Image (cartoon, rainbow, N blue to C red; front, side):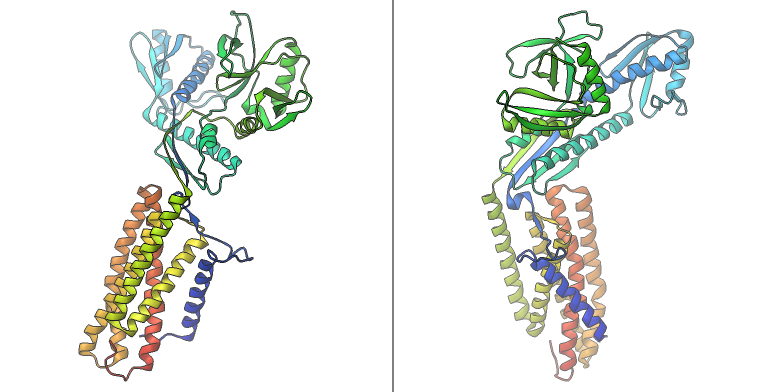
Length: 517
């Protein structure tokens, strides 16, 4: 029936006023934290930078294969199986083994229950594949193993990217996965992306190694350039400490030499290694290498056992700040390449807001005029319900501090149309009921009841489309799906609770007034 109990009326009133109040926090500032939430504007509305990064997993795969060669040597040595000529070539590990042990080695790789000692990972057939080429054995990552490796690399990279972006202080960054080797970075309000691009483009792989003049160094020698490109030096491949041993790094001013430096603090293991290396390397140059380039190579004058030190290299304060940020956030597992970038200025974003608001206002006005002309007083009820519905929708988005994009505004406009559509179906059904029913209350109640199936079916179909768009679509499409999905629920609430309540009150007072619609 059209009857509403006092309890239901109170509930509908409080619920509606609550979300209207929450929505109004976008226009007014409240001291209360619960009512001090706001809708965040997306990149296309407030301007900012959009970067699509691609992870180069080749170095990761090569490094993993390098680690596996050591694992193989140690494992098969424990098993008294001699392997020879182990080498890496084109993402494969090749090695020789005697004919009598060949099948035994193959079985070890293919047996999912075979375990190495506790220091090494398990050989799993779904991670590694082995092939007998006749002359030697060939081991590589399986397809699933590569996917697992790339996913792990992407997860690590996202965490590092997030740390770097947060350190810069960017407002409401949006960092998302794209496939298994790409990362989307949206930075609303940032109109100069050069610094962020510089920070994200560096792997920040820091190592401390001694400069050597001996080409026969038992650890191997690598020729590296200085960062300014003016000279080269032979550096031992032996790593004294790496960025993983850093606890903290901060830019500071060295007043004695009038230069900006980066001061760092090492963890317990790093401090022990650093102290031992500097005690035996007095008089030697210690190269500080970042991403394959020598930042500086100071001469060790004394043992450094305090676990702290400094990096100098002709830094400006900004470059020292950025280097300290990179070192604090950690090294990326793999290099990142910017394959797409867009910058939206705040003026263009404001134009988008204005265009969206004008479209919403025009659509809303035309709907109001149509409904009033078509249904008179009940058109006014529909129009009032539409306004409340709009506030409830904005209130829900505000409560969850959702990000509103231009497609999101389109979703709101579509919600207005759907809300009107539901009311039109109800009123037209009421007209049909009035042809056979003289009692206004029964006719209106029948109109609401008998049109319910068609309205719910239509909204469920639209909701399914919104859910698919949310899970299958990307950024802007997700924004449209969110506002559309939330709008469906607020529309059903406003039609069957708010509009029906207003209609019930009016019809109850005018039940004997003849034909009402």
